[in-house]
Length: 79
Image (cartoon, rainbow, N blue to C red; front, side, top):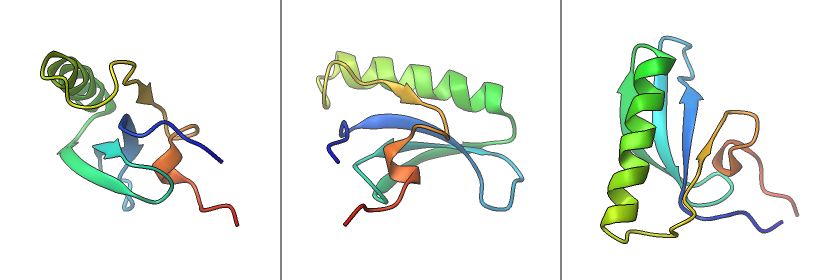
C-alpha cells in the first residue's frame, strides 16, 4: 500500500481528552506537531502548519490534511 508521506493528520488523543496534529510519515509513523483541547483548534493549527511547510518547501506541495478515518499513520502495516 503506497500512502502519501507528509500528510497532516488531526487525530483524537488516545485518552479522548483532546486532539493532536501529527505529520504522518506512513503507516504507524508520525511526528507530533501539537495538542489541543478542541478539534477546531487542531484544524486551525493543521491548516497553518500546511501553509508553513508549503512556503518553506518542506515536503510535498500537495500536502493534505487527513481525518482520523483516512490518515495513513493511524492504520496498520499490511503484510
